Length: 285
Ligand SMILES: NC(=O)c1ccc[n+]([C@@H]2O[C@H](COP(=O)([O-])OP(=O)(O)OC[C@H]3O[C@@H](n4cnc5c(N)ncnc54)[C@H](O)[C@@H]3O)[C@@H](O)[C@H]2O)c1
Image: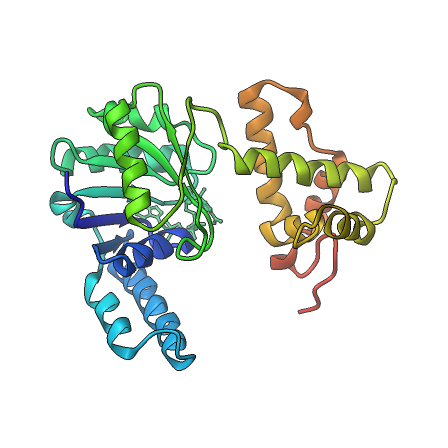
């Protein structure tokens, strides 16, 4: 099926970025949320960010306007009836996403693929909320979606080979360089490896081997990482990192994913990272 109209459900950090990406790649893109106000806010944010690119001479005013002309906002799932492809990017909550998938299934034309941008929830569980589990697939974008080249594509237990290839082709249409996983596994590739890296860095500090600044310095200078692992945890949020490790430990039933008690202590003390003004490092106001 030729993809011309895309609906992105959820207008947060990722949904807004995916909607912008689709419009920049020449598609008609509608970003939806639980209210018109939220969806409008996302489009206004994109308009402002594109204005900044015009000011810097990166794009012309006409190019900005062309993107905005292709970008639409909706406070409900009405536009899904016209969509050729749907990308779900609402909050990372299984019950919320299951309800969204049941609604999408009821509204989308038969044959339309319903993709989820979930980080670590079960694709099969979302597919089971629909009458088209063969058409449900994970397309995991990276932040910010307009910049990051990778899309991880993963099947659920019932995803068809055709759906998997169509999702891969769609990612290429969006200018991305996708990888396709062979089977369903929590947190895909990047999140799972990165989770372990960040966890190991936390264990090093917890067991008194090195100070956070030295752990970060070692990984920057010794492994050429652009940012230290503890700086990265501070950026992601210690609570978000812990939730991911808890999911991995539970779903994979593997003690390698255990996090150190230091992480619990820091979270209990409100040291959630940059967003809280303190984590492994202080951030002032
Ligand atoms: N933030 C990241 O770096 C990142 C990267 C890859 C994947 N993800 C995944 O993308 C998804 C969205 O993450 P985010 O960071 O954009 O979250 P966010 O909190 O910024 O945005 C979530 C949006 O979903 C909306 N929403 C909630 N319930 C809804 C519903 N029933 N219908 C429509 N919209 C609804 C909220 O109003 C909000 O605008 C999650 O599954 C997350 O795991 C996030």
